Length: 199
Image (tube, rainbow, N blue to C red; front, side):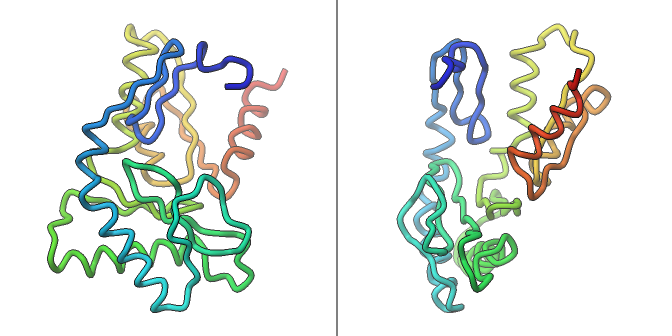
């Protein structure tokens, strides 16, 4: 990684599935295995619902938003990320529409499958289908235990754009301040950091 930050910064990605600590990458494959049997089934149903509604959709898994404007799936293994697309000129691939696609797909599949252990989260960029046990609260708890085991830090700043993100601050409400960066993503985090630490 540029600047060698992986050796200096603790990273917890995909709700704790991937971790980088002291430059070493570890993967909790059990969390991926638990979701894998359902992932392709749910994805296929989302595609079916999109086609029924005349919403263009790309079935391959991608790392970045396709400029051709389709609803798309981000390349992640522990969740199914149904992504919006700002390149869609007909406003068919919004955060609301991708959430509806995921909700309807899960509702249909729920007639024959038990999805009581699943969540569908709406963010400013996607609908995330995941296991309830895989959440940001657990990640924040893990980070606090690793970085501040003695509970010495006076304050934590938490940034996010979804209900799931906000749960991170519930780990220690007295010390954690949540900032909603909905619609601004990384730019919103940088903007808030500039306000907080301007000299």
